[in-house]
Amino acid sequence: MTMPNMHYADLKDSYLFFHIARKVRAYQETHPGVHLYRMGIGDVSLPLCDAVIKALHEAVDDQASKESFHGYMPEPGAPFLRSAIAEHYRRRGVDLSDEDVFVSSGASDELGDILDLFDRSNSALVIEPAYPAYVDANVIAGRRIVHLSSGRESGFLPSPSAEAKADILYICSPNNPTGAVFSRKQLQEWVDFANKNGSIILFDAAYEAFIEDSSLPRSIFELEGAKTCAIEICSLSKTAGFTGTRLGYTVIPRELKRSNMSFNDMWIRNRTTKTNGVSYIIQKGVAAVFTQEGQRQIRENIAYYKENARILMEALDAAGVWYCGGKNAPYIWLACPKGMGSWELFDWLLEKAQIVGTPGEDFGSCGEGYFRFSTFGDRADTVEAARRLKELL
Ligand code: PLP
Image (cartoon, rainbow, N blue to C red):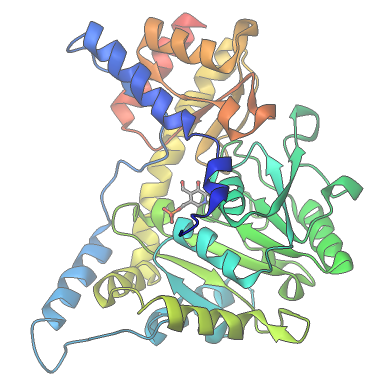
């Protein structure tokens, strides 16, 4: 008899979004036609910028004639895009070669696939509250997970310690859900810790473009020694509105080795076995993001979300609610007011103000008592939600 991967039975039900959707549906059934202010899900509301749309159209036309047609793309990514991304790092003072960069079809895909590089006997550290995919991908692989809770006292930015020892270390900065960002000094401590223990950091930089404080690191490779202990996973989803168009990239420095094995070589071998590259058309569209004009245009969209964040933070300040994030991240993480639990606040906001947020509990047990607002919504909705919050709180 074929045995399934029994680790699937160990997965917690994807309770969070299912449960939110069910509660919202039930509310809508009993309140037909009532408008909801959706600040729960981390999906963008603005379209792709003009530079990207133009490049996508041109790429579609390329595929229409024999002379400019492209078939299979190189599995690690089109040279023009690997080069544009590496140059983007170099402009910020991070010295990468084009070969260190791999194009992916998105950070989620990559966060799951990248685990192929690690032996199943490796343990994985997840700093919680955390993006749920880190835990789930390792449960599926049957790995031992070390859960490290973080809290308000450290600003949700814990330091390495004996209890944080593991082979694979997940670090997400700016963080989803807390919006907290590691300082250079704090991140250096994790890099030194990883190098000392022979661990590898999986650095999730999906929200790096939201950092506005120039003293904060946007890439782990800005730090001394990171090339021998880190892989960086990035996404165009929130940076440039690619949630539905799909593209990400991953940096695996050629210096990253364990037991004489190069992770960069292994990933080339993995990609050539498991993918046939990312669509030419989409890679052309993303190359436009890394032009001067593309960068200017995506910055305008990011500024729109940041203004949403400012509007919400102002309402929370007026109401005297504790929160972190929002400034260098598109998420605001607040302590539930009036002694409410996460789900209690969810129900209360839905009932009293028609606002949908995300309860903290499902990002790890230490998320109980906290709540996440996404700032990717529509401006008019955000303004009205902020007004309702001020009135209610
Ligand atoms: N990493 C984090 C921390 C995220 O919040 C998300 C998406 O919300 C992803 C990765 C996935 O990004 P992508 O859309 O590129 O799969």
